[in-house]
Length: 251
Image 1: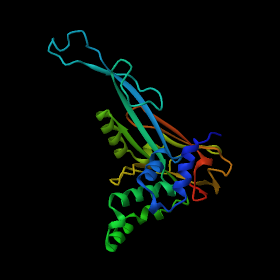
Image 2: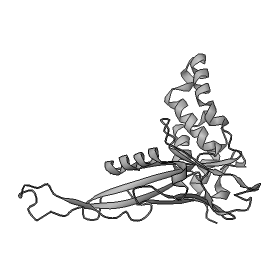
Image 3: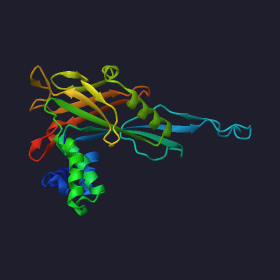
Image 4: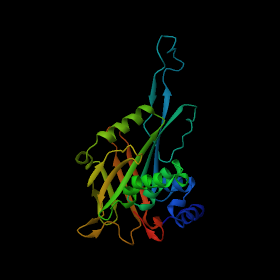
């Protein structure tokens, strides 16, 4: 088993030791982007000018570029080794069914609206707006959400389009939740990206024939997704033992 760095574990303990309504922006960022519930996979590709030095512009043509095939995981967003532009394709995959993740989204909205300064009537209105996220019944489902970010505008538009037109039946051959006991679990349902910014959502069964897909002694849970139309394979792993908050395990 691998462990989080001590500083991350301390931050997690501090965040989970207080009500989510007291979380700071840093706490929210940690839960949504750096915590055990949120896994990031980054692909990278180099854009090269293949007409450089050949008089492309002088011949009345714009320099032509090619994009190398995406490579590697965890690549930085810096330039290429020879000053070429490096494109990044970042997928953030979260266990949306985990209560701390949904609380982080709610707290993010509270902070953006200066919740503590609102009059009581507006607080109640915001509470009513966010209540469904906090009370979502996930007793029978594990929900995985995904967000995409890239400095390649065309790719960003295409991934967004693919996620918005995808249908559950189409995706059943392209996305899986992988447990130690049941191997690849088939998709139960799919929810396209919402305007609320919480990403596309993939819904999987929490139990099979009454048996939990994640046992109490399981070490890992994985998610595999072949993104339609773009050739990207997303694969992330959650360490089950690290999904602890408020003294309970959340996924």
